[in-house]
Amino acid sequence: MKWTRNRFLLLPYIVLLTILAVVGCSSKKDPSETLVVCGNHSCGDLVMVTTDTSSDGYHYLNPSLSPDGTRILFTADWWAIPSNPRFTGDADFVNNRQMILFPNQVGIEPTLDLASQGGELVRLRERSIRFGESSPQVVSLDDDKTTPIWEDDTHLIFSMRNIGLNNQYRMCRADISDPTLAPIEFLFMEPADATPQPRQTQHLESVLSNDRQWLAFTRSSCTEPDSFETCTGTSLWVLDMNTAGDDDGYDAVAFPVTGEYSRIETPRWSPDGSKIVFSGGFDVAGSGTGAGTELFTVDFDTTGLDAGTMALDRGLNRLTFTSRTAGDPISGILNRAPVYSNDGGSIFFVSTRRAPAITLHDRNIWRIPSDGSLDPTIYYFTRSDDVDPTVLPDGRILMSSSLGFPTEMLNRLELEAYQAAVDNPENAGLDEVQLRALAADQRRQLEFFEGVMSHVYIYRP
Image (tube, rainbow, N blue to C red; front, top):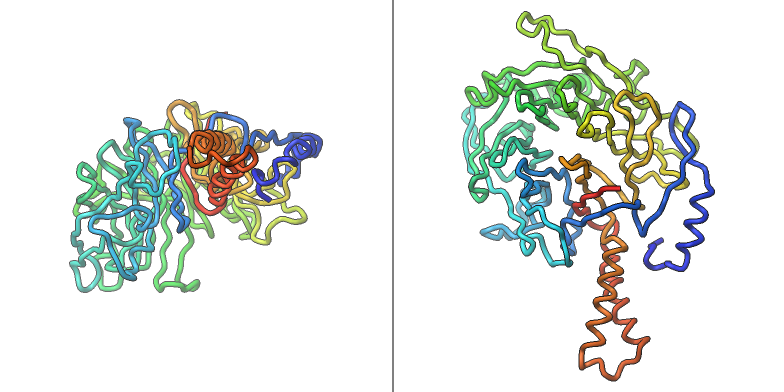
């Protein structure tokens, strides 16, 4: 049901929401809370950053703000922005995720594409690297890129999958002083990568500590691709940035901080660098594999590293306890993408647990004390997916959402469209009802983008 197409139902629905109890998913007693609805999203200051209406339904994900606050970085399909030269045909790489630089600006009006709003595609300079039996390998730089972050205002860190590396993801650094031809370096390579029989190993979801000294990432390994018998689990590793890129990454120092489990993902550092929060499977808590994921923290302490006796899972602590209830997805409830507040007192995260009084399991943003002492409470909610939160220096949340154009913006645009229709001499013969219908039709065209695209937004309650 589209809110903007059934506005006469809004008042009774709000009344209904205020009297319904929470349908929660916690092993603790759920708090009594109601969902306050403002338009088609939670109440608060919502800024829509990207406002393009690309008909192919692109998704802009993993947004992060540059240290100087002037640009936003996110991933998108190659076709989301015109490249120079413009590629034609059916090349596989055009379906891969690429990195987009975008001005940190308020999107005032809908536009046709990202380029018209100042968006720019990051193009990487081709290079080669030692790998396997037939090294060196020429690295194809049009392959998939994921979870890019800022090292500083002119350097990005990201994981890139490469055909020349047996379709493995490796962490790279790019100098974007010239985004149209950015040179890259590999930060960390597996010792086995330089042997005739490299293991199938993935390095993903890297994140820098606030002091820029350590890079946490997830690592999994297989002797044979897609073979459960030869695959290890996933673990959380940390790279010493003082050694990153040494000898093309072969001399870089990286080490595990957790054991291997069925699922570890989306790590983030605490503000003081003493802990890492991450999403993990139930076996991290010693509860079997099960379905779904929970949030955990682990202490970051390098004691014993030089001697090779550093303890794994040091101070491991489970933050969320999500129970199964009737109507939950068979796959279980997913709690992921945690991020600390600036003061370290709270953790925001994405969960598919039920929002208050809502039976759907869309992904929304929740909050929990950083020690897990209280049940999660909802922080931001739409009737669509809300993902990839990042806390900005001023406390606002930068995120992706498939909300579409917020009701507040649709209201303003419809009013402007009506006034433009009134002022247009060609509409002199139309009555009030017809003029309103013209404006409403323009609004309906924008309503289509709810659930079709994932745009970038900034939110503060």
